Image (cartoon, rainbow over all chains, first blue to last red; front, side, top):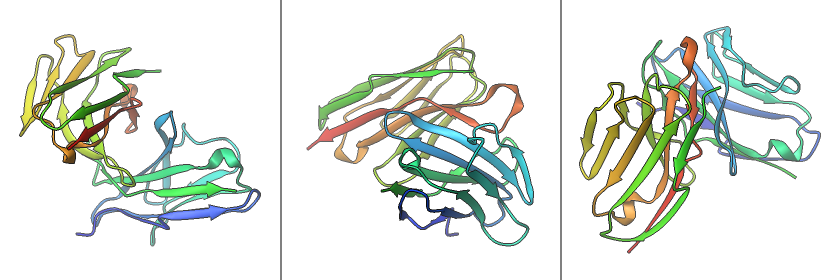
Length: 113
Length: 112
C-alpha cells in the first residue's frame, strides 16, 4: 500500500501563474482533506471532499482557490493567479470514512517567486 | 473557534534528557490527537485519546489527558536524536465536521 501520494513534491511558480496540486488517496479511502502549513502559523484546514462532492470548504480562501475530487483520478487543489503569500506546504490527507483516522501525504511545497 | 496552544514552542536538548510538551484548548476536546512531523514530510499520528484522565504509553512517550478534557501533555523519556521533529496536538472540530484543528506545534531538536 503506497500511502497517500502527492505530486509534485516541489512546485515553483511566478506571480500570476496557476498551480495545480495533485493528491492520490490511499487505496480504499474515499474521503480527502487539504491542509495548508504556513511558517509560524501551523496547519490549517482548507477543504474536505468525498468523491465528486465538496463537503466542507470553510477553510478555503474565497477567491483563486478551488478543489475537486472526481469519480476517477486524483484530487486536485488549484490555485489561480498565485501570489507570494500562497507560498506554503500543502498537505493532503485521506480516510476510509467518517470518524476514522486520517493519513497524511508528504506534502507539496509551493514557492511563488 | 477552538484554539489550541502548545508550549514550549521550541526545545533543544541533549540526548538522554527528558522533556514534556503541553497542549491546552480553549474548549473541551472532542478527540485529542498527537502527531509528529519530520522535516519535509507530513504529520504522522502518534496517539488518539478521548477519555478524561486517560494515560497512554508508546515506548518512551507518555501521553496524559486532563480530567476536564481541556489539556494534555506528552512526556518523552531519554530523548534520542530520532525524536527530533515537530510535535503537534490536534482536535476534531466541534460541531461534527471532519476537519482537524491543530496547535502550532513544538519544534524539538535532540542533539547527540
